[in-house]
Length: 281
Image (cartoon, rainbow, N blue to C red; front, side, top):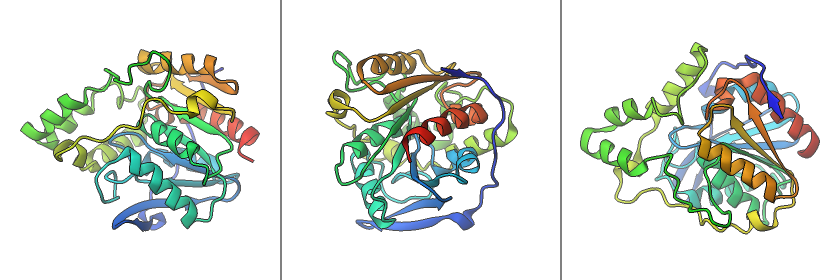
């Protein structure tokens, strides 16, 4: 399936909607908006919950939209940790008394969504993986070369975060293809706000195990999303996964790169709402 509509519903970003909760001394920012079946959005590396602004405006009339800054990103404290992200989301669901929640995981956040879906304490009726890197399939290396993490770590340590942000902002994983000034400002603000604790610390962000049982026994509806101009490695993995899981569907957002929810929000919101209408209620 391919969608190609332009322009989406936009909302004014306001810190008045920010909420916080604590887990083991770490203060995590989240937002909880709208009414209906709950959908939890998980952002990618160097980003934060503000990346979903265009989605909230389109979905909040029909769904309860929950999103958070993963620890160490945005305005959340702590050091980034994929393993602890999954635990944090479990705590947030219990804090909000959510017995069931659909998950949308973007890029690195898709790894976290997979782990949360494996946690039997949180009911996950359906799952969306958006631009997720390769992992968990037979023969996959789990060592994606499309994100030169150690290079960026070296730049941040030797030249500082300003030099890192300047170099990272032109990488295809965060480069927008549209001319929407609000989308560009939003993306730039998130990258500027990224503190880089994982780059500057003594240890890099830990990785979720490659051999996830979810990938071998997944029976819940799964939507795999890529922008038309996403990295070939991301598209290849999504297509491969779609052929191996019984309820998986792969869709493409036209005129969009890796951050397709900002590049072409109207198309992205349309396919997301169609999937959630069918499976999240």
